[in-house]
Image 1: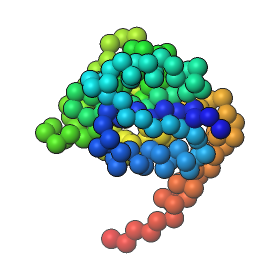
Image 2 (image 1 turned 60 degrees about the vertical axis):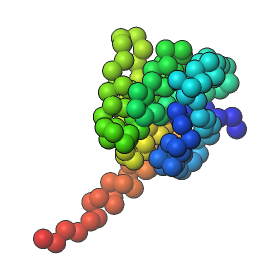
Image 3 (image 1 turned 30 degrees about the vertical axis):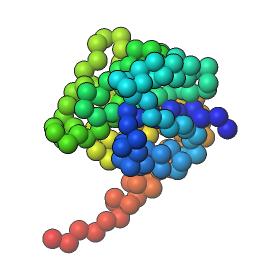
Image 4 (image 1 turned 90 degrees about the vertical axis):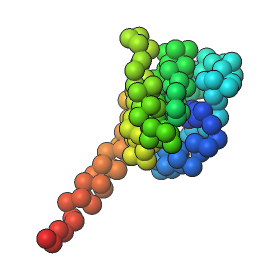
Amino acid sequence: MKPVIAILMGSDSDVPALKPCGEVLREFGIEFVAKVLSAHRTPDEAVDFVKAARKNGIKVIIAAAGGAAHLAGVAAANTSLPVIGIPVESSSLKGLDSLLSTVQMPAGTPVATVAVGSGGVKNAAFLAARILALSDAKLEKRLEQYKDVTKKKILSKKVDL
């Protein structure tokens, strides 16, 4: 099968933080490609990849970057595909800089932005899966089953104060 999701990251140092994204996508049987492409250090290659994404079968782009975090914005500026931004935690501002850079996009260049941290990384994959499920009934069913299992786990917990 061809990948339908592209996970882009600004640096290979982001790989460990993004592993949960790949794990969620694999859990739902969603094919993806992961690439290191920097909005600042490899701008031409990043734009070329994004512009060719649709013809290469990509339906959703997930873009993770820290610091200035322009990768998701560059992706959104160069495609009409849905783009999900993951702000990566930085050492200086704990990801606040990344969050603001990712979420503050001008009208007409939307980037759906998830939280900083592992919950956000997983939610990027879940959001991408939900987008794909709009036209994939089997995936929609798997997502609903996941929600049911999660609900049952929560409701079965016993609390003793």
